[in-house]
Amino acid sequence: MSPRPDWLRIRADFPVLTRQVHGKPLVYLDSANTSQKPQQVINAVDEFYREHNANVSRAVHALGSEATEAYEGARAKLAAFVNVPRDELVLTSGTTFAINLVAYSWALPRLKEGDAILLTRMEHHANIVPWQLVAQRTGAHIKVVELTPEGALDLDDLRAKLTAEVKLLAFTHVSNVLGTVNPVAEICREARRRGIPTLVDGSQALPHRAVDIPMLGCDFYAFTGHKMLGPTGTGALWARRQHLREMPPFLGGGEMIKEVRFEGTVFNDPPHKFEAGTPNIAGVVGLGAAVDYLQAIGMAEVEAREQALLAVATERLSAIPGLRVFGTAPGKAAVISFLVEGAHAHDLATLLDLEGIAVRSGHHCAHPLMAHFGIPATCRASLAFYNTHVEVEQLAAGIEKVRKLLQ
Image 1 (cartoon, rainbow, N blue to C red):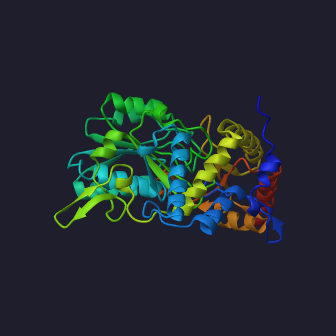
Image 2 (tube, helix red, strand yellow):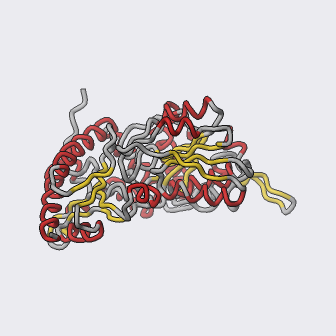
Image 3 (cartoon, rainbow, N blue to C red):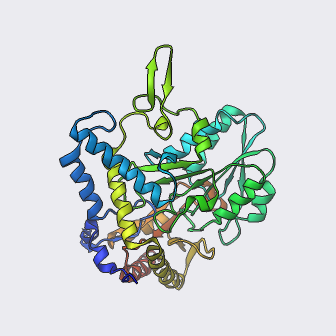
């Protein structure tokens, strides 16, 4: 039996968590925005630039071979992490690029006037705007699945809207605002019965729980690296092999070709067909190190730790007079969006920052969700395994202090 993680020792791997802000110890509660990076990831990026820096797949010299091996090795790690073949995993700059790739390479050639794309009320703008742009160009339209009062998807509404006109269902695995964990396998099963392809935004899932993509039954799964301890500008799209073969390239240039003539070009095989130009090699190497780090802890341990922190934080914050939590669905992820009566979200976040506490305020790239609740913004505290119970108490004490100041 493996020993339980030493969370304080693990926390010590994150250099930024030792700093002070405004003379106070940093309490970083914005991991849904971007995670902090362990020294092992920082070292991997630094080592690449110091010892192996070269372009990938472009040279037979030693550095070129080392860079290619490191880059493709990271792809293999990432593929194993989500249990998919490496040649079905397209490396991208993140979820936004991945969704746009599907929108322009898969959806745009297929959609026509009268077709529909089904989204949900809780989507991030990255899973709304690309579909709007494609709909404008094809004559298709957007349909929206609504929520229950707790912030869960209304599955009866979803089933009712999975009609023949729907050519794609795109939805988030975990809400970045509410923390709601959607029943992805069940939803994909309902869509598949009707012959409707599915795209899942996994940005907020992969950093916090084990994800086995084949078990979900989706057609596309997009995720980003910087939320799962990796460098910014990294991520991936998994797609079924048939889709990757049928989709035309999204961008043209080097690497995505086998042969170029003025009379025509022979494109590379997937996934390289969708990876034009020089990629973020060092970033992807760092993402491979992030996968190693998460697997060394174990995703079941990560999820259990964050759920324990969430339980304490929810109980503590819910006891504060005038504080309202948005998103109370059972089994939610470690995200708490809240408002305090009489305090604007930005004022609350600014004053918490003076206490060294970093939370995000705003619409969280989810305008339609804010409109649903009739509010312009919330504060969001998002927890990660490197947070502590002491920090949860500091958050609650900080909110209580700010509440008194604003009153």
